[in-house]
Picture 1 (tube, rainbow, N blue to C red):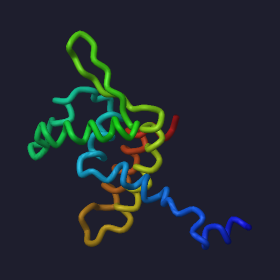
Picture 2 (cartoon, one colour; picture 1 turned 180 degrees about the vertical axis):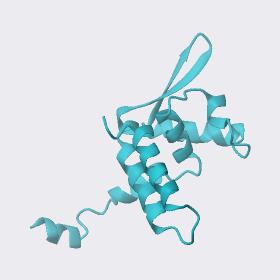
Picture 3 (spheres, rainbow, N blue to C red; picture 1 turned 90 degrees about the vertical axis):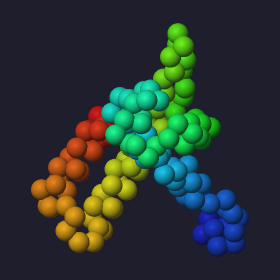
Picture 4 (cartoon, one colour; picture 1 turned 60 degrees about the horizontal axis):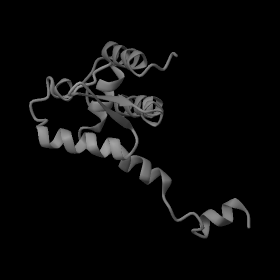
Amino acid sequence: MALEEKLYANQFERNIVGSAIKTISNKWTFYILKDLFLGKKRFTQFQENRPNLDNKSLARCLKSMENNNLIEKKINDHETEYFLTSKGRKLNRVLYELIIFALDTHEGDFYTDDEITFIKETYIDILDLDG
């Protein structure tokens, strides 16, 4: 049976794209990933400038990210730090494309063209797309 026939015959019932989207669909996951790409590692650093991110929500999000193998938690001398795994680092291009999609399809004049260019260039640096 050809691949196309298998796809249409539901041979591949598992929706891998849906599973991948579910992995990053938490309200705070994008922000935490961005922080990790920026070098932040600690619980309190993830909460900086986010007054709506309470301890319980952050802990739940970090645990989910850890369970999905996006991050790993290391405890040294009673200090907990979080790091991107290789799987988490692979999200850099996905996140960038989501940002580009959002910028290119936003309605209204929320950002100027110069601001859009700046945001795109900044995220290239943040997400280490040059390297």
